[in-house]
Image (tube, rainbow, N blue to C red; front, side):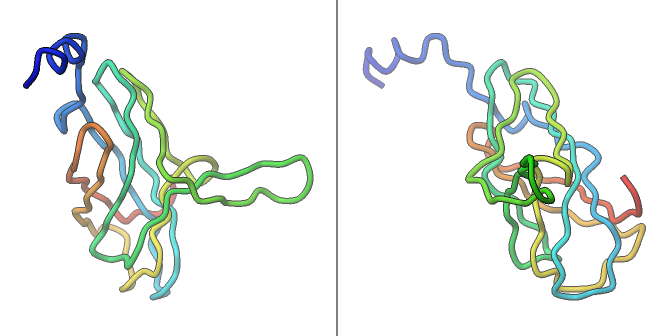
Length: 139
């Protein structure tokens, strides 16, 4: 490491996987294979710097997409893909179908209430984090 690199990093506090917890991750039950479902969760970032959610993978979905809901003045709200979901520094960020959230696309199997899966979230600074996801009715 050069002295310039050391000088640039003196104030750095990079987020680590231990700085991020994903809480209350859940999806609704569905019988329909091939459907798309929103994922609810709370992301707790204990790091002093903001982070962002880049990717989310679950064994029961073919793909995922990060989206936001645009609530324009006219017409119904519409979903729009985003590159990443910003996460507050030293705080909680709620991801719900009414705002920023992850859509799990092309569900591979029926999902029954009470089932649990281990998924993986990738964050810009904290890296990869295993996330327990529960199938449950209601928020």
